[in-house]
Length: 279
Image (tube, rainbow, N blue to C red; front, side, top):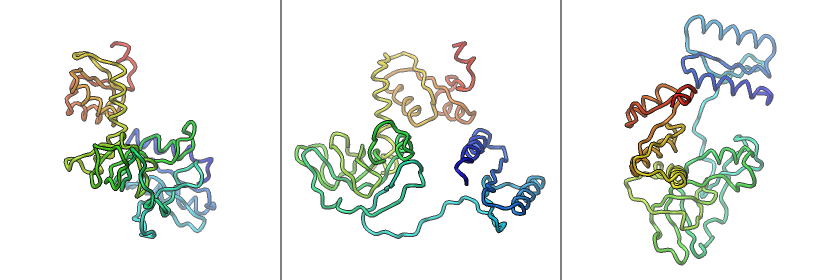
């Protein structure tokens, strides 16, 4: 795909996301000749008229072959510790997996923990980091993680070697990481590693936001993007401190989901400005 056509691909994906019932196919004919383009258009038109389900994205080549995006399991090519690496920011495709050399030999300093990473939670900050649009130097991507503590420095009493823990690791998109022990907390087997790695930034954001707002028990709290990670955690937090949560969301299934979560009659549409005007 030519970089100049990226906006069209993004528009098509947005339309399909906003309107799931729409059959909108994106044809990439950048490297195709006229016969291949005509053949592809004909095939798509015939499939649409026949009521067949269309491929959302198709790349057409000069030899009339067509390619579609699919996820496939990568071959095991590296052994030992690995890490996610990019040579330059600007595109997610710049990411690649490389050996993590020397990390096992490092000893923790005072107040530091060494981690065997088990699961990593991705945040929008990581996306901005890889794309090169995060202000300043955010360092390597990856922070929220769940891990096994492999070593501890002096002065640490709440963690020990072998503990399962969640928190913020440095460059956690790797087999091995390290962290300031104050940013890690032990967990029990009531949480899987995959569940635990989704919590640190989400719940820290909720805690700091409501701490700044200081709502008293019985106050109404309006949550924006109520069906997102922070929105859902905020509802639980509001219930914990005795607030009455309301939320705005967009699509109908999100309203239905929040109603099942206990917000029946307390959701607004983020796409209906009159709801806010009327209060």
